[in-house]
Length: 329
Image (cartoon, rainbow, N blue to C red; front, top):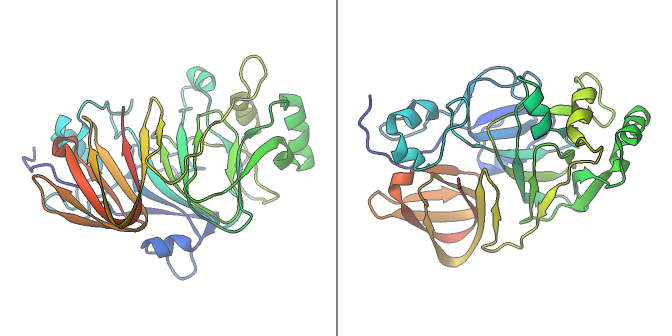
């Protein structure tokens, strides 16, 4: 077993080409091929398996880029360092890291989809809940995010809309405004509109049921499972929990994760604590220097993500940047 002292970890992004993907992740430092349409950059991942329709079916484990444990996986180091990395946070049910962190670039509309509701997952062994939150990084003028069904929608009316190609009319659409955070519990029908770039924080599952694909053909739909997940036992649609903070120190708190949003200007600084949890910093724009009490300072530029072990306890970020600070309650 490694006796390496815990240190901040950067990982090789896992890039996923998607029919709805775009090219803007290149501006966030991602190595996109000249013709590729990349929809997702998995920044921190530790999945023993992925769904065929989501992550491609293989395992997805982040590989450390630098330092004494370069080349090792997050999974290996998590088990080597134990509480020094996780603090009081519990691993996922499969023993993996308890969060999955991404950037998403919707060059076209993302499929209308839903992740298994808690009730549905309890009845199906191959279904895993996926609670998530999106923070809007950039958006084209007039772009929207679809986040839930209209309250009066029923399974019957939604089924009719699927047949007629009018699912969008059943959904709640809000403007995609940079800095806004949208919390989407598992079971909420949702989609990114074309032109929206987000950072995504989620529980470690990629079980996704497509309800509609905006007229695109060739990709599997999962209508029955999606409908079963989208409505509770009373027949009402699952409601989105919307948190729309202005760019400031507002907090989104769920049972699975806590997100703070920090905007630093003119060399401003913020003190951050791990709170007996791993601390994940995502730079959405600009750049910052991150200083530690007992570790060398590091830079963090737009598009970069770093995982700070719980044992490091605290750090100071200073610069001109928009940052997400993510911990596990």
